[in-house]
Amino acid sequence: MLTPAMLPSLQHAIAALDVDGWLLYDFRGTNAIASGLLGFSGLVSRRVFAWIPRTGTPIGIQHAIEPGPWSKWPPEWGLVRYSGWRALEHELAALVAGKRVAMEYSPGDAIPYLDRIPAGVLEMVRATGATVVSSGELVSRVYATWTAGHRASHERAAEHIKRIAHEAFALAGERARSAAPAAEHELQAFILDAFARAGLVTDHGPDVAASENAANPHYEPSAATPRLVREGDVLLIDLWAREESGVYADQTWMATIGAPSARARGVWEAVRDARDAALELLRGRLGSDTDVRGAEADDAARAVITERGFGEYFTHRTGHSIDSRELHGSGPQIDNLESRDQRLLIPGVGFSIEPGIYIPGELGMRTEVNALVLDNGLLVTPGEIQRDLIVL
Image (cartoon, rainbow, N blue to C red; front, side, top):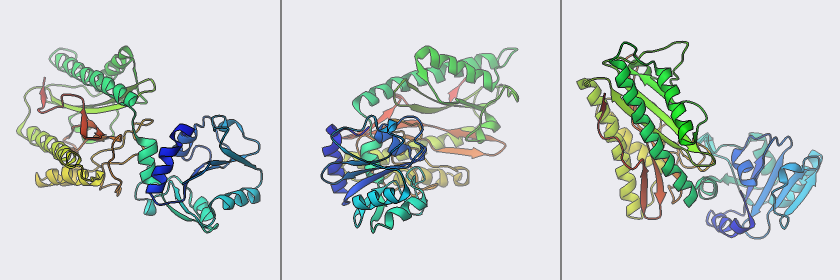
């Protein structure tokens, strides 16, 4: 949330972007970035703006009947009220007319996680004579970065998740050799119970998928259509959770029930080596204090899988932002496939690295770790990442 204490660093970032200010806009929660920075909670049923100038005092534009969402707005900052559209447009023009303005806008919708401003609002702002540019770099620096507390909570969650994944695999292997093999949804319930015991929470999931079901990256096990996990299966477990008010950890692990086939080993080695190629690129560039973008890491992972002959089966980005508020966050994505994310990876931003291969009707494999950009390199979680298929 924006505070007077953080205003100097924010205005420094605004100046570095070479804009006159950052214009935040929200209506009914359509812009989570703005509502998060403004500290809003509950329904914002009228249009609101907040102008953070390059120098000087921020000013909010509040609807007259809805002061509640502005309860955390610092009293020393400006706040003007409007009722009708004419007054709104007048107050907006007084703030931004003729200026160069950053907003949550992505030209051509290149980065959907950033593109939060309706076309009509862009027209309204441009009608004042303002020039609108993307706030992407500001979002990375101000909204998406982790604090030391965020990092600590993430690392604790990551180690719990790793342990729970291995416990679920052990259960799957034990049951597969019994008269009562475990179903995917039963393993899912086991993981959720383990989260609760560890003090972790999640929004949905996890994903437990055997063999052909793992070829669907967003598969969800169900008691209505139970799939037993048996000898010979490939088993994917994708699980994510966080401490209350902490930062998510998100991991995918792979195992086989019995010795893996040559085909399974080949697919696994391709995704593992793709993950490592992305991490190697990031470590090398960050360690040499050289700029690097998420799209470049995506290209590095994709090149490995393509070279191994599985390129057509790697159908999603290499990684998503994990910001301090959301699992699929608004910071830089590790993506040059689904979107064109050219934002720099700067200290404090976190993300997943999760290349996958999905062969319909046969099997799917993914390996997923998380990473945080440090001042002098890259932190990867969990502390020990998967090197070989787990054989149960």
